[in-house]
Amino acid sequence: MKENIVIIGGGIAGLEAAGQLIRLGYAPIIVEKSDRLGGHVAHWHKLFPDMTPASDVVARLSEKVSDANVFLNTEILFINRLKDSYNVMLSNGISIIARIILFTTGFRLFDASRKEEYGYGIYNQVITNKDLEHWFNTGEDDRIGMSDMNAVGFVHCVGSRDEKAGNAQCSKVCCITAVKQAIEIKQKFPEAMVYCFYMDLRMFGKKFEDFYISAQRDYGVRFIRGRVSEVSENIDGKVIVKAEDTLSGKPVKVTLDLLVLMSGMVCNPDSTRIASMIQLPADSDGFLKSKDNITDITASSKDGVFYAGACTGPKTVPETLAEARSAALEIHSYIQGLQ
Image (tube, one colour):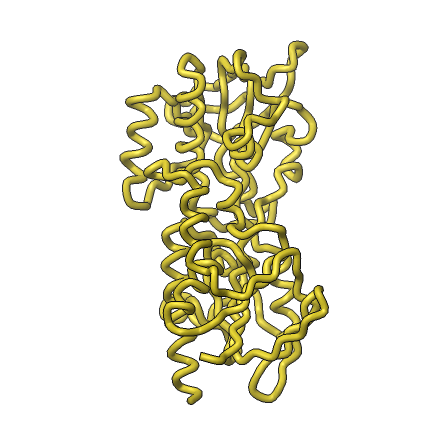
């Protein structure tokens, strides 16, 4: 069908939506600002709870969009609202007239250096969940040695559920990501002590609770309920973490070879920048505001503009893919109604 459908963002939401639209007979246009498809998932190692290689998921989704028109290393310069369509100007000089725009612009990880008390960017052995995934994938990070990982800690809710940081929302996937990464660390360093410092554990998804129980029972990961109060560094370059175990009511002090901060999801600034071009509002949590948070999560307040994935809030991979399929169907129904 000859109908321009511009998909802004080539992460897994954009790929899945494009694949579904192709099956419905359309030729979507994917605009991706980076040099590769797959978004954040393309940089992840394995996905919970089945430890599926992230590269396999991205490869399968990418295969489905071989017939799509894909622009990499391309940004949206501006969008103009026309009478019954939109004029989308790209950084490569191409202008597209389209009646349909799908935002799949995703999220950005919270900048952990803003939480100075945790020492990211100050102490060499403090890294983020993203840094650790990069090491799992490549083995390239001088901060992580292959022979001296005797103790590793994870801090949950870094930049999430934190009004002082301006992010009161839960990022939904940090708890289970910490569990996954703790297991992967134990698989690589079986003798290491691994600690997870958490506020409370939100194991809501399919098999998440089983995954958490396995981390304790099969891998010996220690879960300590309590906020980290102080992070410092000793003369040997190791990280000293102080916290309170609120279940036992006792203070905790551990010396670690590595501290991993679970940076949460915040709205991608590109989402709000592009959305503002056509007066699309943000919600109270900073993410793009859906037409309705219950029945119309993939619809925007503007005709012909749709959302899918983490541009409207933190999502798991299955939720993101399901939303992308829903958005594709909504777009198809919308186009049918225009004819």
